[in-house]
Length: 272
Image 1: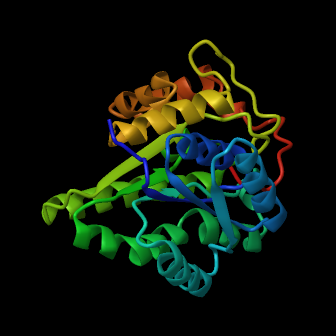
Image 2 (image 1 turned 180 degrees about the vertical axis):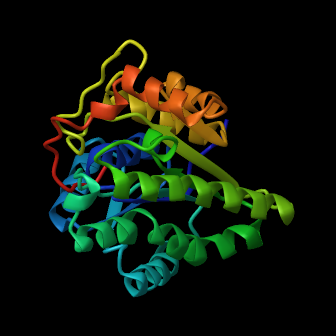
């Protein structure tokens, strides 16, 4: 098990949703937590919540869709706290509309928040990890990064990209024989409000995940240096079913309710 006591941990989109819960959980284990978020009030509320428990979580307002802002904040963070030991790419947005109803600016924003910052953040913090031969980059993707879902074309595109990013990065690190770890996390829908209104046809196999449960599994995967976490485990069956003809995949998607999971979606663009 990884010991995070005294380790500097950065979580993007960390002031609310599962980011907030991860920050508190890892701080309780002795981690030095810094969160980046657009919401300064939420950062202050999280810091106060942590202080009330006798733990410390600090934060910086940062728009990770702004490449220059990411690099500026990264330099400031390193100067103040030192090199990052664990980077958790958690920030994300969702629009939840069919492709032809997606405004162009919403598509662009999805890519600017869900995909491009993976590169900016890695370029900002990975060199020091490689130099020290120690570090961990965690990327929160989605089960929507394993299978396309109607009404989530932009979101799934970004999450497929996150899976590809993690895999490519892992291969690069293996090539140079680096001890820096990576973890890709692909959860089914989580009840943070981000996906308010979504439904599941077979909750026994594909339940809407509770935030506390999801965070417990994610933190455990980080501490165990797991390369990939898919929750619930049944969601990983899509990797097997991809061996079958597309018509079979489509039929299975209909059967398990993925084709209409977004029919009652009412969530707003939100952080995870």
